[in-house]
Image (cartoon, rainbow, N blue to C red; front, top):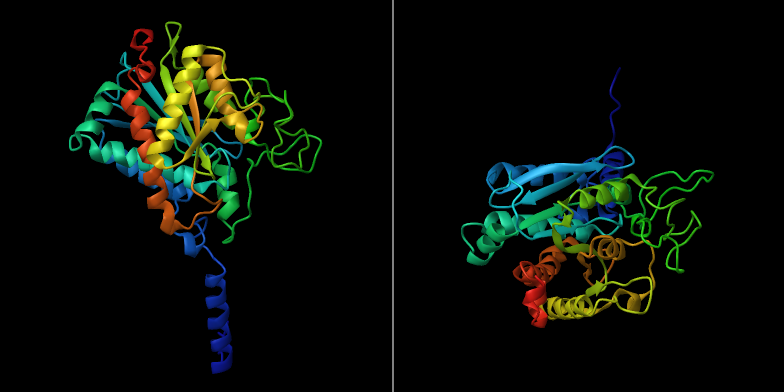
Length: 348
């Protein structure tokens, strides 16, 4: 077939359309972020990076999957430890990102933690000590289907939920952070409307992503004892450190735990120049992760809300994750005995 030949006017028009498309945020490659935010990691880019880090540091980093998303994507996780292939009797920490699709900075935070631990080991004494004395788990993106959907068209869709169809409805998606099993749908902190951004799903644990997290955490109970001491789930935005309860105004009943939550939370917030509060003070939430983590396993579980806007430009990734890392460093320092911050080391 003969190729059409374009005159100067048509050539100029095509060039103008291409320039406008780039300006409006066309992805630089299929599935990538808009060109103006290319510093963020798509699912494929995230996978390449974590595999490269694991390959470069096989002695301390092991990649694995905790399950699959509704659309079949691997839910990637990493273990970081000095004896990474052994289950040692050491305090464990868990970090996760990506519950909400549009909160892409939360995934960047998990990647930053992995880089910090892997690259600092053997060079930074504090990092080396933490890797030698604790076991760290990182779940990088719990909602890869939603994340990809939010950015893959070249402009953000402001999408929050996963991509799971709702039975009996044409609506798509469950808010993963309203789908956990403890007091699911109890207290006005989620919605039963499939059209809502905070739709809790048709039943607790209805999302494969939350079930995968549940099963992984339950699997860290060894000889009747939960090995994970502390946990942080990263969200955006607000520059906040939050802790249970999220579903009611009263704090947790255990006096020591309530004091530790407050002490650790405020100290982490001070280091990052954030604000700290019990989660309920921000707004009521039910069926969320941190309440389940604490109630089911007595894990000291925190939410860190990163950044000061929903979609921080990629130029701010370094600055915002650096602030988050200051909080993480403090928590990891005290992970071997969190109760020492309230002068109760005997409880460890």
